[in-house]
Length: 257
Picture (tube, rainbow, N blue to C red):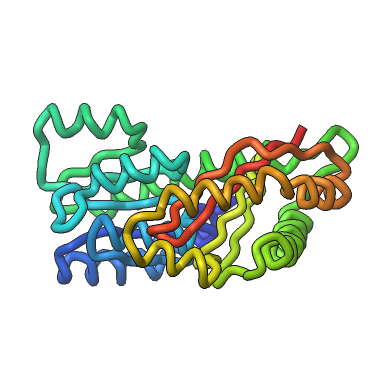
């Protein structure tokens, strides 16, 4: 695949607090990538990541509110494996070592050399594409093409939306589904009931809401597992549930066996 076409398939989140730099790099990337989302700081970056589920994150390190490293720690803690490219004026050894521990793909010193940035994006995009090729195989007789994959993700989104309304009495503002290899990730945003929202507004019942939600899913998720099994013709088992009432999102991981 040509490098230009490869990058046009990528969705990138760019996190930078300095407005002029953010606009300049955004304009550069927008011409070369499929989609570019910008964020002003680490907290904004977390929220944009949850909303858009990008393929790659480019982030500065030193930012107000939440730093780039704190943002990365949060996303890694929540189980997200999205590749990171760091852009920073810092070049001290301790900072670089800390980012290595977070499994950072690339570390670029500012001012950004756009040629090197594009080379890094192409390299990471190529690796993502190769991984996705491997992930498209359901079994030796059933190949999941990109087109069918998109259709299945949409179908899983629809059936999960119906399940959510049935199980909790409320749908979600946004649901995203991603099939990666033998894993299905389902993100849902802003799906709390009025009662749960009221409990959270007191500032005391976050854990209670988490426990309620987890109990509901653990006892009813078999409906979704069964429906996805029918769709994929493969066994599906829930692996993990991450619920964050304060940040208003949930993430379910299911394994394709």
